[in-house]
Length: 366
Image 1 (tube, rainbow, N blue to C red):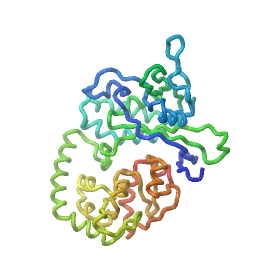
Image 2 (image 1 turned 120 degrees about the vertical axis):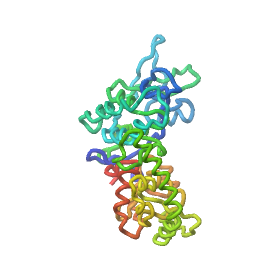
Image 3 (image 1 turned 90 degrees about the horizontal axis):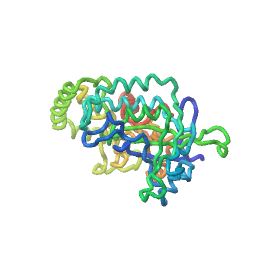
Image 4 (image 1 turned 90 degrees about the vertical axis):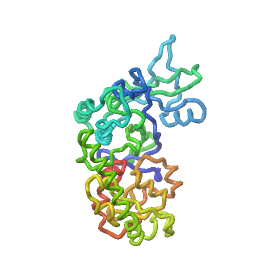
């Protein structure tokens, strides 16, 4: 149990004993008003979670501690068989973060929808803010394809109100579901019933990593995008090479790999470059203190918000990667990894990264 990553929720610490990540918000699940123009229908309230046959089926059964997938039928009629009762939950903070991150897509609509989803944003936000408790518990039921169906697709659903709420806010293709299987740190874990923490997130490339003031009309956003492109070309010509040179001079090795070969080092922005440009802070875009020297794998982890740093250099690992992945990266998420990401005076940039780029709530992990 000591090697499991910990997460802090509502004043309690939990061990993440297992997880299922990257469950896509497929079209068959999407609420009808959120559907893309290429798809029709109303969508089903059941969510696909994987195949229940073979090795993948064993994985699904072990995770949910349930072995009767696709057997819920009596006299030719489907029966909702309980999988986990009242020990699954969404968190209000995660739902708020998702709807906040998705606001630009609601407004700008880079995808082509059947309806104008901008009209849904206010009511969807209200449905979340009106929730009184932080953890919203619900039960899940087996509504899988029947065992005589060769497709053997495992589906879950719930009749609780929160299930309807998350269906109405989630956007197609660019969203996914993450489920963490938790045990409390304190207590007899052998007799504890696990909790299943359901979270919804956006794909990195669609996440709205922008200054919070950037909430305007489509025309305003288009103007900002045009200005950004012009500024990026200008700054790229004038400052990119100097920025890279200064970052590596002040941080001559990757703190993870200890590599010093400049050919393998990336000058990774802490506060994203495009955000600096959008805010008119060209000085920040080329400030060497707004950079870390990282080798490519760790640059991607940092750039896409899977990891972040505290002001003292301690590494903070998010919960969107498996224990196996962290092991292969030679990172212990529970260790106090002070990686000496100095020189100092990066506090302003690191605070931005923790708040707007890091994909987890930093307060849940420290």
